Image (cartoon, rainbow, N blue to C red):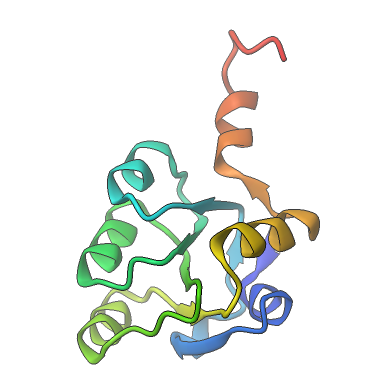
Length: 127
C-alpha cells in the first residue's frame, strides 16, 4: 500500500489534477499501454502507470476503479483528459521516468503488483 503523495514523491511527479486526493491509498500497481489489459488484469484500488494519454485511459480507469494514474516518459495530458479526470475524481500525475523505471521504483518502495494479488488469490497457484 502507498499513498498517492508518496507516489508523487518517489517518482518526482507533476500533479495535473486531483491534488485534493493525494491522501488516497493505492493497494497495487499496474503498468500498461493496453487498456484491454487494464480491464482484464487490474484490481480495484490500483494505480495505473501508462504512456497512453487519452480520454480512453480515463474512461478505462473509471470502469476499472483505478485510484490514480501516472503518465510516464514525460507525457502530458491535454485539457480534455484533465477535465474528464476531474469529472471522474481520478488524480493524474506525470513522471519523466520510463514505465519500467517507475514500476521498479514503486515496487522497491513496497507497492505490490496486481498480478501478485491475483496469483496469491489463486488456489491452484503452487509457486
